[in-house]
Image (cartoon, rainbow, N blue to C red; front, top):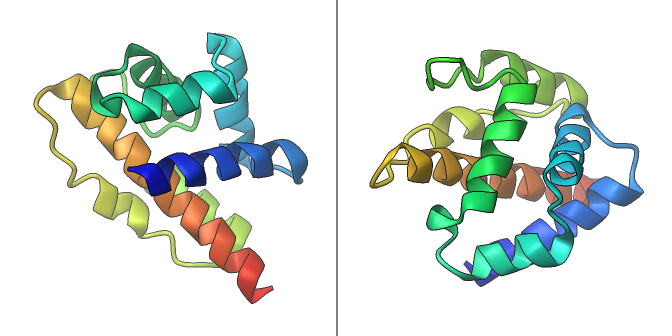
Length: 132
């Protein structure tokens, strides 16, 4: 989990400093809309992240804004997977894999899918930067 906290902090810093993709722009906009700063995000990640209301709100905000969460609570990553692949010219099938996350309830599942997708996306961006 500590590795994810570091990756999330790096991701937020990268999003703030680079020409942001749609996901990164949405992620940052939701943080602003919800009043979540880096320290709040980091703190939420340290303490049972699946049960943090702020992470649930952030997850829901991001997923709804990128069109990945339907009104009935089901996920559809078709559009955002295509967007990810178009922006990065890489395989973004990690999004589909993240849908396999099961939580104790729907709130935990939402946050778990979000954390999986965000970590995988941050890893993808880091690899892309390393590989140039």
